Every structure is written in C-alpha cells, then in structure tokens.
View 1 (cartoon, rainbow over the protein chains, first blue to last red):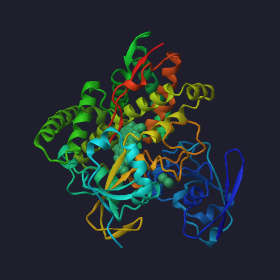
View 2: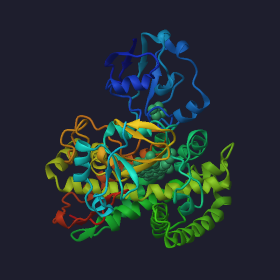
View 3: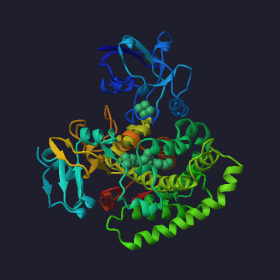
View 4: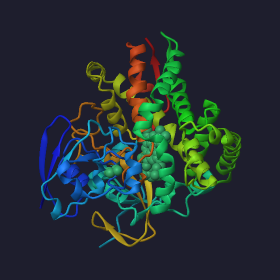
Length: 107
Length: 391
Ligand code: HEM
Ligand code: FES
C-alpha cells in the first residue's frame, strides 16, 4: 500500500493508503476525500481532479503531458507550476508518502 | 453463464410517461434486463452504468448503425472513441472550460439572464418552460458557440429537429427530411459567419475551432457545433424546469436554499432527481459479462443514469427531491470520456446565475397546481410545462 496525504485548501489533512497502480484521483474518490471530484473517471476530459504537488515531491511525480497541460488551462482554480491533473499521477512505491495540496474549487 | 432475462411487458409508453417505478423494481429484481420494446439491454444500477461508461474499449460509443449520422449529416464526436474522439473533443472543450466561462463570459451571461427575466410579467401566470427556460438556454448557447446571429426560435427548432432525427430508430423518412432542412439552414449560417469569426477571434467555440493552430476539418467543426446545439438547449431547459418544480413544491427547502445561497446544491439535486438525459447507449465490442450475465459482442447496452441516480446503494430516499444530501455522486452528466462537455456551462448559467436571479426578482413565485405539470420522456426527460404565478 502507498500512503498519500491530501491537504485541503483550508489546511485539513487526510491521509489514506492506496493500492499501487491506482491514480491519485482514484485513490481520493474511493476514499471520499473532499476536494477532488474526478467526474470523467480519469479520461482527461474534466479538469475537476486538479491538485498541486507538494514541493518535496515535484521531481518524483514527473512532467505533465501536452494534453494534460491543455486540459489544465481550463481548471477552475489558479494553475501553477506545480499543478497536475491527479488522474494522471499513477501511484507506485517511489511515491509512498506523497503529499498533494487541493485547490479552492474544482467546479 | 446465461444471457440476461428478456422482458416483453415493459412498453415505450410506460417508460416515457413514468419510468421511475419500473426502474425501482428493476434495481431490486433485474438490474440487467433485455427489454424487448427498446431492443436493448437495460442497466439500472449505478455501479453497472458507471463501469460501462468508464470502459470505452469494451463499451463503444461508435455505433455504425446510429440514426445520428443521417440526422447530423456527420459522424460526430459523441459517436467516436479513443484518439479520434479526443481530438475533436479538445477542439470544442476549450470554449467551455470553467475559467473561460467565469472570467470571459460571466458578465454576458448575467446580462442575458437579466434581460430575459426582466421581460416576464409580474402578477400573472406564466409558463416558464416556454417563456424562459427554452429561449434563455438557446440565447446563452448561441453566444458560447459563436452564432449569436441565429434567433432563439432557430436554435430551439434546430435542436429539436436534430434530436428527433438522432432518435429516429424506426428510420422513417420524415424526421430525416426535417433534420436535412435544418442542416441546410445551419450550414448556410456557419458559412456566412466563417470569415467574421476567423477574422475577429472572439473566444467563441466556432472562432476557437477555426483559428486553432492545428484545426480539425471543417466538416467536423460544423458537426461539433451541431452536437452542442442538439445537446446544449433542451438539457439546461429541462434542468431548470425540474429544479424550479422541486423547489416550488418544497417551500421549506426553498427557504433553506435561499438562506444558505445553496443554489448550486439545488442544481445538482434537480439533475440527480430527474436526469435530463436519462439513458445512453453503448455497443459491446467483445463477449463479456455484467452483473452475472453473459453480454454478447454486438449487443447494445443502455445505461440508465436516471435509475443510477436513485440507486438505494448510494442514496437514502432517492425518489424524493432533497437538496441537502450529504453526498450527491450523481451521473446526470455521464461518466468517462464522453462526460458532458457542457457541464461547467450548465452549472454556471443555471445554478449560479439564473436560479438566484429569478428568485431575487420574484421572491414569492408559486406553482399553484403542481398536478397540472406534465412530465415526459424516456431518453430525455423533464416537465413540458411549468405554469407559475410570478410575484
Ligand atoms: C443540465 C444540463 C446538461 C446535462 C444534464 C447534460 C448531460 C449530458 C450527458 C449525460 C452526456 C453524455 C452522453 C453520453 O455519455 O453518451 C452529455 C454529453 C455532451 N454534452 Fe451535455 N448536458 C447538459 C448541458 C450541456 C450544455 C449546456 C452543452 C453545451 C455547451 C452540452 C454539450 C455536450 C456535448 C458536446 C456532449 C458530448 C461529449 C462527448 O461525447 O465527448 N451539454 N451531456
Ligand atoms: S478526472 Fe477528469 S481530468 Fe482527471
């Protein structure tokens, strides 16, 4: 299992244990983490799974693709260098302990 | 395993007049059921409908036999999968993102809503379905799409004719003749406007698609606009009418929605309670299995999101309109790659702008005879009239 911490906009932290191979979005949705919606089920069509990867983890989560970049442009909250679509981050053991921050709004 | 049971009793008329008691029974007794009158396998539980929509490889939108093709005179993104779908979807969705809608279009939407609401007479009985819901949805969409030169009447007529054609499963000639005429009108207008939207980019869907770095073919630009016309008027219209019905028949909830300014919650509950698009079809590409039954390749399954939205496994008393649910994981906008491209537009315009404005202007609006409201539809559903007294 891989540990992921979601830090809500108001600072509330939710820690969950997710299975390897699932995405940061899926893990949030199946554990009822508020602040990640993920309406399109991870098909990169909705931008309601926006998150900011914690500085310490930036290097390990990898780069966003061009398609992801374009979709992110439309996200409801501010997009920064650390913005990702959480459905595009797959969990593997190197991400055990991952911390992501959630935006003010997704819709 | 066996094939799903076959039902010969359920009629299309029953499904159109009041499907909910039937769906409730099917959720309990036969969540996977071949219904002879529809020619489809109906799926009525939330887990099943979501699983199907999230798996486009196995459950394809690409149905070569769809009447949608002649109706739109094109193979549209709604009926494509994979990369082909993604490319066309990306081309239009740029105009429909939360950011564009909030930052660039917000003030215009508010102005349009204000104009249309200001025209309504105070102290009289008005059918909001015909006098507000339809025309306002049409006007807003005409601007988003970049064809504001089209009249409300044209937008609504085109939309209906496209939908009627796309639903012409009996392949009768008349609906296609009518949709052909509408296509001629639309194509002529699009051609006339092309140089303007290209020359003076305005952020509308048409303009963005025309001026993209790597534009999709012109035929598909037209098809995309038509899909949005077919899918972007009746649904917000029906959603608005449904929500108004829900609030006006539950005055205690209305009072609380007002106090908390919970219009967005009211919006989500309205489309959960009676989903404007009740059902979608997917073609099965490989022999598979659903809910313990064999589903053969070539079968067409129908996801009944209307029923998924009342599934007892997700909702307590899903049959009732109740705005203040803890959670509302409804499927009214679909799931997976074909998740509604206009979801943000609908949420913003109906939920954040129109509803509060309408109740602000007519704080004592009433629906004196809810029993006079007629509900209709199997594939698409909503009230077809809404006689309210505006005060
Ligand atoms: C409350 C209002 C609305 C509801 C409930 C709704 C519902 C839906 C649903 C369920 C689908 C998926 C169909 C499927 O899976 O086969 C869909 C697709 C679509 N909707 Fe909406 N819709 C609404 C408003 C709008 C608006 C305002 C627009 C246009 C601005 C729009 C444009 C589209 C488009 C283009 C698609 C096709 C997406 C694709 O195939 O990738 N919708 N809608
Ligand atoms: S879940 Fe829709 S883009 Fe990530």
